[in-house]
Amino acid sequence: MTELLLAPFQYDYMLRAMLVSGFIGAVCALLSCFVTLKGWSLMGDALSHAVVPGVSIAFLLHLPFAVGAFASGMLAALTMNFIKSRTRLREDAVIGLVFTTFLALGVLLISLYPSNISLTTIILGNVLGIADEDILQIVIIAAVTLAVLLLKWKDLLLFTFDPHQARAVGLNTDLLGLLLLTLLAATAVAALQAVGAILVIAMLVTPGATAYLLTDRFGRMMAISSGIGLLTSIVGAWASFFLNTSTGGCIVLLQTILFLLVFFFAPKYGFVPIRRQTRRSTKSIPVTRARVPESHPH
Image (tube, rainbow, N blue to C red; front, side):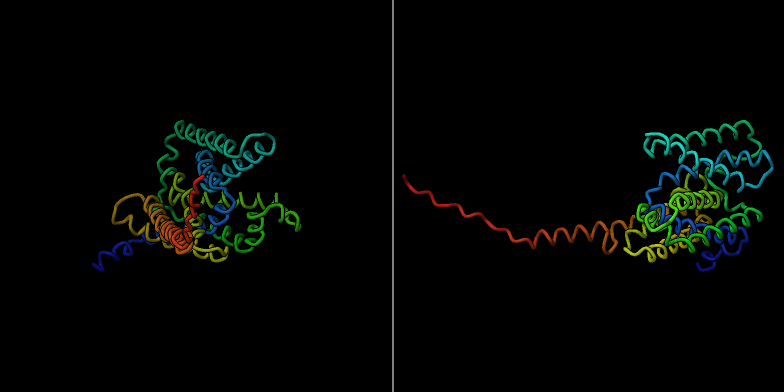
């Protein structure tokens, strides 16, 4: 049984897949804390889909994968910011308009030049067949993102919680917003090959949402979230070897199962403990009966 469980570690491609997935999962999980608190879940979804045309154009121009994807993601983010600041449209409408346009453009380019890139690879990822140069690009992107997050997390935290207070203390909120968007786009690019465009949003939201239910302190939330991202990514890649299925699907499914367990059984904010506390509070309230006055004959 032990030999069977350790079988994936005997193959180089599985070792690389687990290491790359774990590294990406930890970085995505750290960023997911800010995404969750800022309410930018749809923004992450938009950027993960908006990189598709950039990938296609990069292959057509013989450029690195990450360059085209990052440029496309940043263009989409800046376009959303521009439209939102100059119209009365709600943010969700702007996000939906921009990311569907970019996704449609990417699908169109891929259908016109099908020999250059596989749509399935972009949508579902292919971490098991990742090349050495792609691993280097992912490691560089993830390392830079991690370094910026660790250096600027206090400023980003204040911007996330209260942009007005951040502006009042002298922080450049426009620059911080652009920085967060840049990190989001870069992380989406790094995670694209591991889990694909569809599942990137789960890695950018689920670990942070899970950690949010477990603690009230942001530093602890970041630690819990990164641990969840690291563990589920490695275990998900390991499990995909035995299930012979998508690595990204296994990773995201594990994260979702963990979120559901925390949602129901978290000590303080879980559904079951809150339900029990509500019942106890209801039982402890004394019930007083109103005294009915006796009727007197006229």
